[in-house]
Image (tube, rainbow, N blue to C red; front, side):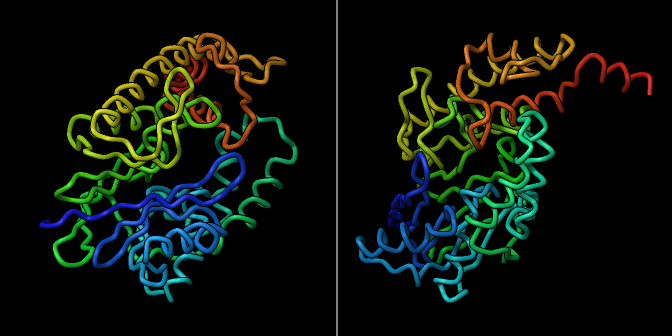
Length: 321
C-alpha cells in the first residue's frame, strides 16, 4: 500500500451508549459493523455526508460478529447501497444474520438459563424484531485467513478470533496494521462492568494472538471498554493503548477464570442472590453490577466456563457414563 487509508469512526445513538461503526475510505469503501436497524440512516449517512462521502458508495459491509448491535443494521445499509455492497461474516455467526430467531435461541441456551425472567423469550423476540433491519444471506462467508481487496492496492486480511462469539473475526488493513475487533477485546467490560465471552479458552488464545502476532498499530473497539478503575478507553486505541488493553484483558480473564473455577469446584446451589448459582465468583471478583441488565455478560461468561469446565457432579457423570 502506497498511501495510508483513512478510517473514520461513525457513532449512532442507542440506549445507554452509542453504537460504533467504522468507515474505511478505500477505493471500494467499507463499513465495519452496522449497529441496529436505525443506525445506517440516523448515524452513518449524516456522518459520511459531513466528511464528503456518500453511504450509497459503500461497497463492503464487514461484520466482526453476529450480535444484534453489530449486524442489526446490515440489511438496511445493504439496501442504502442499492444492494451493491458485499456483506461478509464468519460462517459460525452467519445464522444470526440469516435469522432473528437465532438471537432468541442464543439467549435461551446461554444467559437465559440463569436470569429467572418468565418474559425473557418474549423480550428477546421483541428486541430482534425491533432492531434487526432484515434477515439476509451473507455475500461472503469467511473462516479466517482470507484477503479482501478494497480496490487498487488496498487489502484487508481476515483473522479468526473466537471467544466473545464463536465467529468473531478481526479485519486488518494490510500495510498499516489498523485492526478492527468488534467486541473481541473486553478488558473489564463495557457499561455492565464485566467482560462477556462464550468461549473462555478461545477468548484467551485470541487475545494472545492479537497481542503477540497481529500487534495492532491502531486498535478499533466496538464499544468504549473500561479499565480497572472504571474509566473508558475510547474506541480508537494507539499502539501502546492497544497493548495495554490486550494485556489487561488477559489479566482480567485470568482472575475471572480462577474465581469461577473455584466456584465450580464446589456444588453450585440456587440461592436468593441475583448472581446465583455463581454468587461465590461474584463475591470474589467484587462484582456488584446488575447481572440482569442486557446483554448480561456476567451470566454469559459464567456459562462459558461452566460449559468448558463442568461441575464435579457433571465430571463424575461424564467419567462414569
